[in-house]
Figure 1 (cartoon, rainbow, N blue to C red):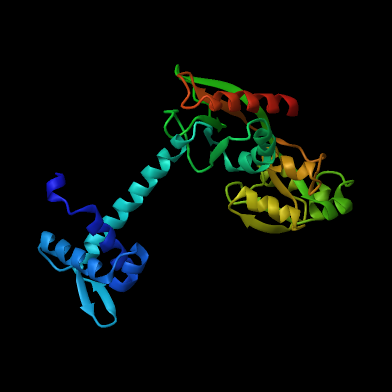
Figure 2: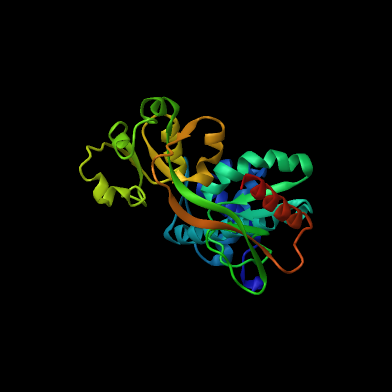
Length: 296
């Protein structure tokens, strides 16, 4: 198959010229002469048997065939870049790849990473918050923290933290309403909602709040932005205690204790039972459990 494919350097030059609309700009980006770029792209067109560019005095534009090839080349280079990125941690024996929810990463994990670095100065932590990990293959991830446990024979799964949604507000708002009883205090500040929880943890649909005059301050897609809205005194939010953890400790927000909490699925810590990709993964596993025990 490789004999039927153009040389990789031709495709790199094609990508640069197509993206920049100029052979000269492509030559600058790739540190080649404009003549070298032109020659490579002429040979590419010869190999493919069709024109890829319309050439004019102001630059180049793609033909229909060029546009189709460009789409394929861009997708291929993007996948190649992603693949190279996946193996990047393997250069360091002190790297550890952790997949976890974004609220846990921001509110609980990030504030504690400095202490981990004091114990293991050379450690390189990779935190992935967008992956929905359902298995551990030791290529994409070393440790998984999730509200959905992986109960398989090859995965060790342990409780890390109990979690719950809690009502929080800014410091100034707390000075005005923190001594008021529930649910009347909800009339004294706007309610901040998550798009995924339009009933504010189910409470806005209950009979106890129907008689109240509530103000909806904002509806937000991301709980981390909702936390920022609370910090900036925009109203009362209902977020996971894992997310609010550090903001509460730092005195940026106050917990409204009179508002009932809502239990959330616990956070689980998981690792493969097979030999770890790097020894530091097991060290971080134990460190996370130790930190969680101290919090609890």
